[in-house]
Image (cartoon, rainbow, N blue to C red; front, side, top):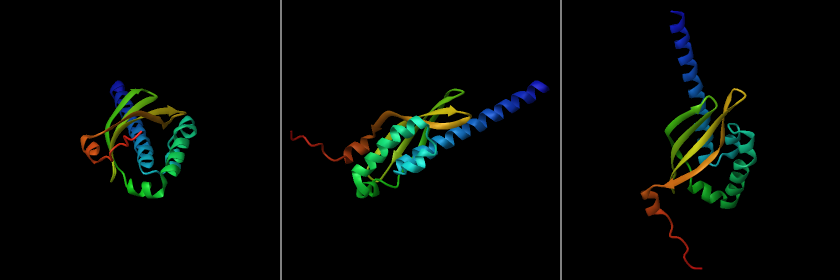
Length: 141
């Protein structure tokens, strides 16, 4: 009887831990998808804040407010969540905005008992619909 109770407690704690990881991953990805870099920083590891988020702020400034307005709001769907071990997980997302459709992955790390987004994994791909609507590439060189 005692081992059954221990098993139930273990299962419940793993389920709660996965929910926390999923929430952090989604909140980070949603903020980034909507150009809310300061909000994303709340869910990011220090390494991510010093690299990816610095680049994201620079990118947002470079493309300008009109582009950001044209690319938001973003709709975000969690496609998959894979727990690698006790401190690592990967989430896959499908992001749709008024001007593009992408899929991307996000690595999550557990640090000091807290799940945090740890950079994005560069696996962005466009769907066929997004390719059809994309602007033609500049071929003049």
